[in-house]
Length: 204
Image (tube, rainbow, N blue to C red):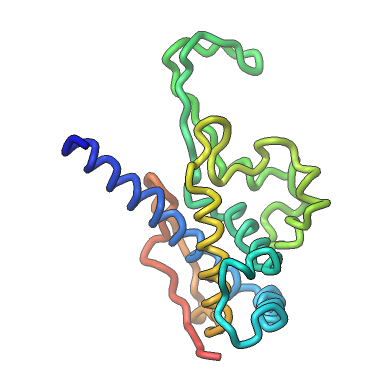
């Protein structure tokens, strides 16, 4: 590789393969701290599936609710909250002329909170991701990893590591928030929380 290519590959790995997964877990723990019932349901699945053993890749098919918690968290707080595409040729889209070279932006944040696709869209409801419910969603009503030929190449790996990490955290800790805690956002390339999240970890 040239020095530039090596630098670009390293930056892609850190940004796309580290920060996004870390943010997905950050917002998931925030939501669990705000929803004790969901946290208890997650803990029950971990007891039933894992007992006192640490999670492994072999457990992934059984950690269905754990995965649903993550999917719902990324619906409400997508780490990559907006993506852009450039028109290579002039097109008409929804009655609008799109000249060649135009950059179009698609917002996961907006789409994932659209009441046309989700009942009570601002509510944290992991049961939305039961297979029979999720199958009714229109294509691209949910796209935390982008879509089409530019879909994130690491999406399967990211989900694998996020489920295993959430299971590990859930086995060991209970999550609560400091009194009056709330979060703001500093949108950049990813959706960062301002000043972190004032949470409390209690060992189980």
